[in-house]
Amino acid sequence: MIQFTANGIASAQIMAGDRPPRPGTVPIDPVRLIIAYYGRVTTDAPNRTFTTIVTQSSWPQWNGATVRRTIVELAATRLRVVADPIRDPQGGGSTRTWNSSASNDCALRGL
Image 1 (cartoon, rainbow, N blue to C red):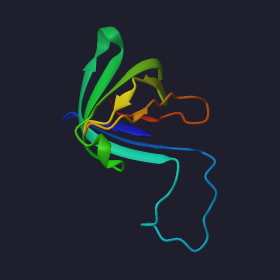
Image 2 (cartoon, rainbow, N blue to C red):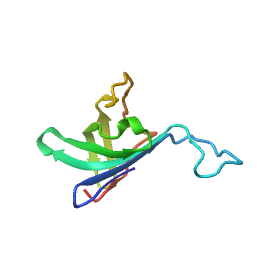
Image 3 (cartoon, rainbow, N blue to C red):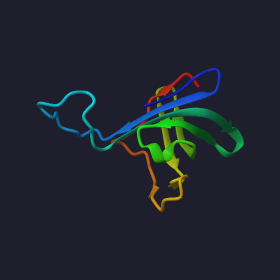
Image 4 (cartoon, helix red, strand yellow):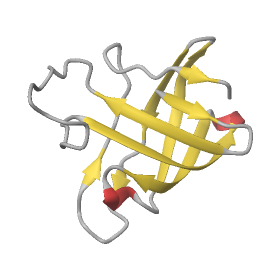
């Protein structure tokens, strides 16, 4: 899910749809296959992209990173995007790429 505010903030929560319940855990226990982040967002309508400068992320290496998404489908209740590779801004070599698919679509809320 991704949300956009009128004052230029984006918030995203991306998780696998097939995560099973984990009995005996509490909400602060680490979960797998999920990332969440928020930050200042800008849009580039002619190129069908939006870019977020991450303020805070569940993966701390993304704090301060620039995350660009290219819109491949936009409908009233559906947003599909392809992500550029993200490099660890603290100098690590880790790269993550997120591609939307039928199993991890984002819901568009009030752009």
